[in-house]
Image (cartoon, rainbow, N blue to C red):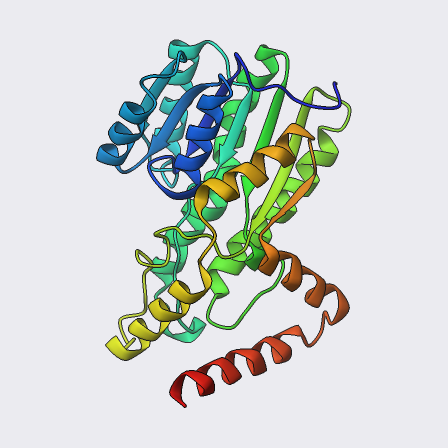
Length: 280
C-alpha cells in the first residue's frame, strides 16, 4: 500500500451528502477528479449538489438512502456496483442529533439515533467492503465526533453512538492492517452544519431550553464545512488512523487525556462562566 493516496479516477461513496460536511467532501473530491456516489434522505439537496458539480468531468450519481434502513443500504451498494463498477472510498458521514437528559429521552428516539449514527456506518461498511476488495483497494472514513472522545451531560445517545463508531473503526483498522483497505476515524469539533437545528429534543423540553441549546450550538459550531472537509481529506490522503477537526477538538482531546476522570467538571465550570458573562 502506498504511503499517500490519490483521489483522481477513484469512486467515493458519501452519506449525508446533501449538506454540511458531506456536501463539502463531495465538492472537494470532485475538484480532485473523484467520481461520486452521493446518498442522503434529502433528495432536493442531493439534486442541488449534483447540479453544482455538473461542470466537473466526473461521474456523479445521487441516491435517496436512509442509513437507518438496512434494506436501503443493500440496494444502495447494488446501485453503486451497477452505476460505477467500483468503490474505493467510503465516507460514513450521515448523522442526527438528540439532546436532553437520559431520563427524559424516549426510548424510540434513542433507538432512532443509534440506528443512524451507529448501525448506519457498520451496515454501510459491511455492504461496501466486498466492492472495495473487488476494486483492489479501499479506504473507510467514519465520522465520529469530539463527543466520541468526551461525553458531556445531555449527550447520552449521541456520545454512545460516537464512542461506538470510534471503537468499531479502531478494531476494523487493526483487522485490515495486512490488507489494501485502511480506516480513518474523524472527530470533528464545532462545524457549522444544520445538525443542531434538526436535533430531536424530549417532549418535556421547554421552548426556553430549546432556544438555549440552539444559541449554544450557534456560538460553538463555527468552522465552515469546506475547511473541515479539507482537514479530513488531508488526513485520508496520508491514511491517518485518527483526525481531529478544529482547535476545540484538539483542546478537548488533551483535556480528556490529562484529566480523564474529571474533565466534565472543568468543562462545566467553563460553560457556567460563559452563561454568567452572557447574563451580566
